[in-house]
Image (cartoon, rainbow, N blue to C red):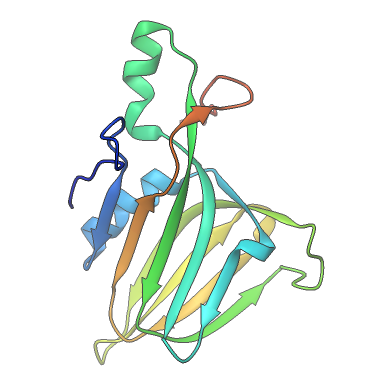
Length: 158
């Protein structure tokens, strides 16, 4: 995991990488409840890269925001998965370019030969499954935070 700043040093955007299951759990927590238009995901077959530009809640700032009564924020982030061999989706109408997907979590199942399957679990029983050569995932904020429309973090049942 590395820290970074915007060019003017005003913010400290999130910049994480995952090469094992524990690191992936951290990234999965950061992208929980992120949303993205279906048009903002791309598989670059030749480069073996899958990328998604998403709007995520700033979960890492939740406690501080609540403590001082500041509205909860979102930020645009880029999720990049390298070493992708194959991509398949289920429960998604790729032809409907107006679709906005809601990301619930990332789940990894290692294979016997060092490869594995990374799944982007979506709300509404949708999923994007990636066959990967090895776990190589990065999440980086690309805009400054902005106030979430509701001003509050989503509530989840325990």
